[in-house]
Image (cartoon, rainbow, N blue to C red; front, side, top):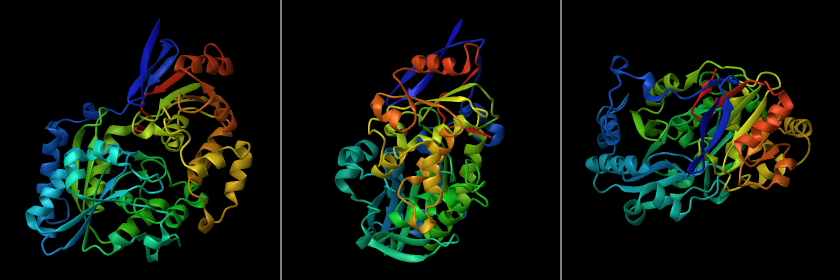
Length: 430
């Protein structure tokens, strides 16, 4: 008898049909099932979580108090690749700022990191028409060197350059959401600044081959993580006054909000997410996962997040089936070029010789994929990338998850065991 497992794909889903006897485990974020009133969690409306967090900040006065006397305020938010529920959070943040300072000159800055610019249509989808029509919005461009300011050296030795508008602000406020991150430990908090609004050169050096290779640069780890240490240092140097980070359930609805100090509020949120996301790894001959659907599966560049979770369950030579719509194709031009420059071993060798200060944009995802591909076959299920390109990046194309399973059983044997991780981004198998 076969069991159906559903995987997020774009704005919809795809299915896998797996013999129950061979389906060893389905690993999921426990979500609200891991929470109860004994742990201090109470079910509320989404807006109420945010309002309660803003009214009871962690480690700082209320934002309405902090905003008094501040003229130029920059509110940093996430871009189109992140599922931050800004339609809910931004109006509440703006209202809280103006409660203390009705005349504040507020700029909403979209933290693109090295991603492409967020379009107006995407902004309207993310923020709502009222904010796009009435508020001042700036899209960060990491490659505009003329608009960058040198701030300081970072603990790793990297040079920190940041968006001039943010540097010249009287106060910086950031918003985001927290999920496991495959080399920064967790998303959110300090990431709004680095990589969010830093220069391309700074981001590249922070994400160097050496940094990514650290044993501490992995999901769920903040302490001693060289990438996160640099990020926190950079955000502190920018004197981030207040953050609002949320935690989301599998439907991308708010189930927790954490506001206040850059580190204290973020750490509280990370602890909350850790309880939901951490699962015991289960090893399978075949591991199937997705990149969580829209917006994160818009390209392959983002997919190492889920693939890294799958690898934790794939043993020494398990086959990984990776599901993603990839409507924007491979992703950035550097990622696309590097992924197609040779065998996985050749690519890894090339990247390993690049000094941190000469790091190439997007090489970190290539590094993760190349090292994974040296041990595992990866079957890519997507409509967004043509078969020939998939082969050029050393992966195996498939149109459906069931087709991918047939291929995987061919490699591992008809009786191979299967582990399914429907949303690999939302789970830490550690």
